[in-house]
Image 1 (cartoon, one colour):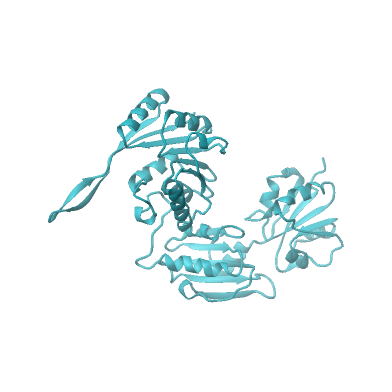
Image 2 (cartoon, rainbow, N blue to C red):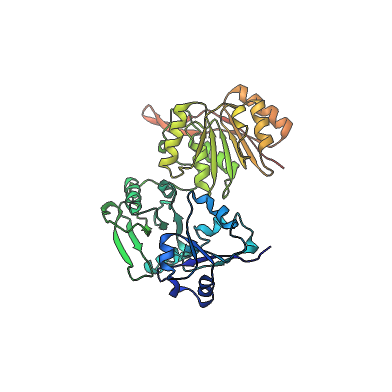
Length: 400
């Protein structure tokens, strides 16, 4: 097999002049160069066959494999493996056939312009992705560097910040960094009205007002942050539940009987790129879950219309399963069977019937059985008393 026939080259606003001599020689020797219009312009007058990004973009892999054996260069912006095309190509083509040539990334350039330490900020992309996913990162004193989708993205993010009590946050848009047309735009989020170039990087320093919404990444968001019809996993129980589910980077949760989506949403917020599929037969509750996911920064929550266990057939195998509704022996068996090794399963029950079933499942499969009782202080006449919430019986287990 031909080795290292494919070179993925990061290029900046300074074009070929910004490349190392060795990387420039690779580009100049290419038989085929693939990239966007901007990349072709930056790479100058090289006598190679020029190809543009295919449409749909997923066709790129077929396009590349058809060129195997030729000297092929893919041009990307900055670092090809940092929120860029290199990662997508690397998942489909063996690593031994690819050589990566990184350039300074937009994040590194922006951090240098702002005087920010890369170790002390969050790097995000909403390029070609739902802009709402940045909401989960709005925290007091957080510094965010965001690759945007276009000229309208900074204004959208300014609205998100202002609506959540972060309107005094300084925002800076940096465009064409490293080139002769480099530009900078500054304003507070609540005052943002700049028209900016389509290709830009946004820096945000989050400043919270005294009444700002606090949305930590750890589970246990306030109940009133969710739209719901009264049926939901309440705050303290939800925090314990998500802790037992153990969110991890890129892991998939099945949330069976998702209701307003509170558990699935907290799972997705708790670990970067965590995914969730909510199974819910009621259309009104699926609508609530979708609205909550958008408002709380996890717009990629997948919702399935169906009843269990039938609705579980054909779904991607999960890393964790939460059963908050629709509990039956058949549903448990289907979920447990589908669960990956080291997968976590948590079931909450509040009725005597569900508790009896959990006791039986514990006897047959083991795990940890817990009874959760929560009391909240509330006015009692002219004084204050404790009001107990409905107790929850919880079974949790790890598949070994």
